[in-house]
Image (tube, rainbow, N blue to C red; front, top):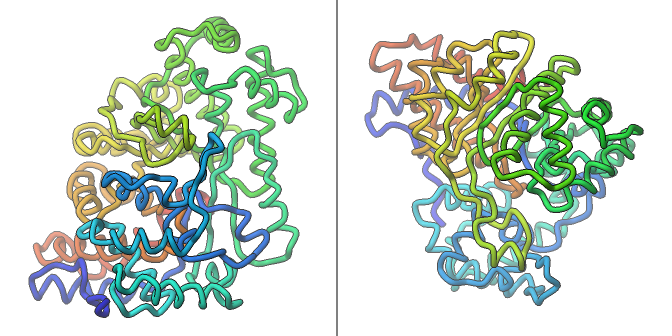
Length: 468
């Protein structure tokens, strides 16, 4: 692997490239704010060595194994854990060899950028990953992982991470976060309240989960008022453990603002398993508005991640469980869907609701205009299928003219792959500097303004939006 081009992702014209390079040099060393992600807090609690290269780069990263799956490589052969108790490959070297032999599949993808940078910058790899180099690179990375300076906490500090947020369900006991706190380690790893399991009637075991929510909160959650109170108590408990935000991954962006009696009746139907599909969606929508009201009470920032047809393959869901790369973007309506919530709380400047999308066509038509007028609303970054250089650039091009920079929230990596975090943030910083360089060369922004915006996009906006 040749040394990464120091001007990668900068404009091709010389003037723009020079400006982008200068902007980037001023922000490249800023601390990383990672306000939304899915890394395992157990890594930092126990600070045990990562077991092997495959379990660091392949099995936790759905970007990686979904691409390999698309070419007919079974998930079980990649070591992805099964939910049905069936066989899965346990030999990390065999998994790594399979990954390396098919590394050409990632040409042109953001995963290729992230993995190359992680292998080079973190582990000192200079060869291109392939079938021929698989064993040598495996041994080099494995040797590094055996050293104290490659344990999770040491890498966290080396990556210059100021804050890293994980995501836990409402019923989680947060034992790993408590262990981190009690250890005295200075690294800031915080949780995020994700209540999908206890707000979505379509989730298996919804009624049992609601009952457990009440037990954990010390209240009867089987009545509408008791259920809301259980959420309030649980949110406060998460906040006491360090949370600054909630997160809501719903199939649609639908919100509702029903009268209390109608909401209570809908809750009763949900709890008894009698909801139609439309009623289940209405209940999820009502809970988004209720959660926004609760955020006004407890100060937690609210994140809404709608628009995914989750677990699209019934076969994979049955064999491997949820979140195995088969979540597919869908068309999403935000203008009508968000209106009940925005009518209720959208004009409150003391509330922050961050909205993400998997429907890229909604950026300029819906989300940027909404975020560009409602004080409570902020626009999340290019996310998931669009956190590529091209997707990030399109995001800036289609949202800045309406929402500006300061109704957005910087960047988040949303990853399970720990060693990709600095690479992902580096890509975002480079793309933003390239975009800003274009504004400077076209006479739309002065150089000192571009420097200030670059710093805000890389660091300040995320820190402010997530109240860190």
